[in-house]
Image 1 (cartoon, rainbow, N blue to C red):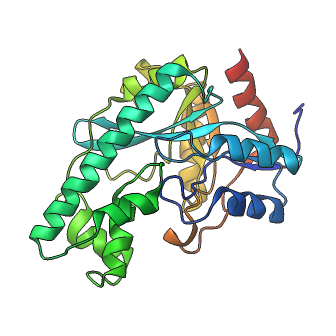
Image 2 (cartoon, rainbow, N blue to C red; image 1 turned 60 degrees about the vertical axis):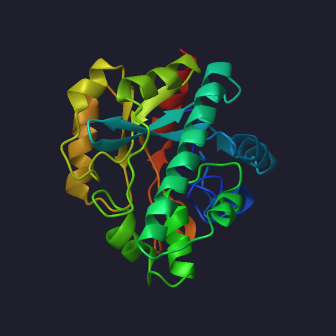
Length: 276
């Protein structure tokens, strides 16, 4: 029997990475939708964790630390969700600072490419707007729209920023094994984010060999057949199951907080795995 009740959204982003809502605004929507608990999973940063945990306590909600790590397998970008880690762990913070600096360098390089293409942006303003969190292509895309070089964020990616487009630069390569190990060393578990979304076959065997703990099996854009397939794989390999809305605010219109959730039983299994 589960120690908790209700539904849980374990995949949401704020202005600390590429979301458009502040932490307090996201939590307000968690409360409004009567969820029992949540996790903020900003990209490659723990900057949102203290505020999110504090607000969860204020509203009597369950909270588990979260973060979405970007890793690379060959030329493919894969996302690993870390849960239940210590956000003050020294090795984790040192690694995240290296990632942050690499993101800044990448953003500056893409801005230079855009300038050569006739799309001059104020990179200092973009970096300032992203704050001390994780700057990324969505920040550049929104700046392109605001400057009139693209009509939408999607167009900005399709014309300039997507893989293979003229302003694209690859990320600093962190292997899946490195990302999974980073989560484990900080006391957490590692879960493959949105496995059905990638435009390539997920290297599940490689991830399992590296110590993957779970699969995200609830996601807002999936139909019942897709959900059943990934839940079946999770059961076959005795993996944890997580899920959530992947909320990004206005960056992803139509996808609200709680658009996908997991049960209390699934949440309890994640907590048990973290504490074991």
